[in-house]
Length: 105
Image (cartoon, rainbow, N blue to C red; front, side, top):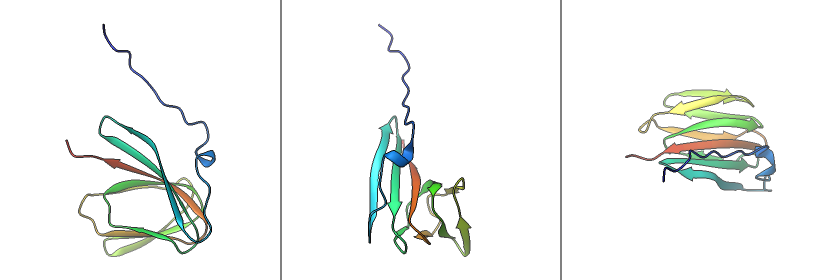
């Protein structure tokens, strides 16, 4: 018997997490076939550093350090970082981002 392809639908990512007071919250929203997608919620001033990833901003404003550059990212922004790029992310206001990680095969 052949297994049918499957799919996952999350109709509203903002319903999946709440922005915590004075902290960071993470929730895995997908984890299969070597792909892991994590939703992060940050209060102002909270940060995430040094992981290879793709970051997508859903809500809020953040500043990212990518190597020697600093960039501001807003809702709709998409950023890919190579595995060995030194990087950091700081929330400028309460924010929600999607972090997508690909495991090595």
